[in-house]
Image (cartoon, rainbow, N blue to C red):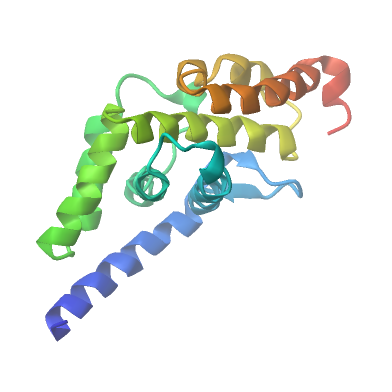
Length: 192
């Protein structure tokens, strides 16, 4: 690999590091705000762990989609789902293009194609990625030490169409929803 290409890859890796400091609305068990990088890591772990139960999917492609799906947040930051207005895809795509700009064209085009595939939900893997993304979010909200005014009820409908689109993801969501129901009840929130 040419020295100029090495520098282009390193420039991208350095820029993507911002995802480690991009905070989400969820909190860890100890009450620390969760980063987008941590969210993406657990998504990939979920896909890898569930691989045998997903024989109809290309799990390597699924993991690629999960790795890149929130990369634009390294530039834009995270907007919590309850605060999102309208379609944020165009702005995130512009951010992705800026983030990917240093890369050689083949790498840039491959990552952007995966990001576009995820956002269009164009393949079974992309639809599963969207379902796992929503599942991980509601799971984290049941595990985290969230603020007293945290809206657990929002999670009961959040991403339902995506999680219900795959039978395994729907089955995994059912006990999470039961826990969310318990936390949404005022008596359940007192334990936090």
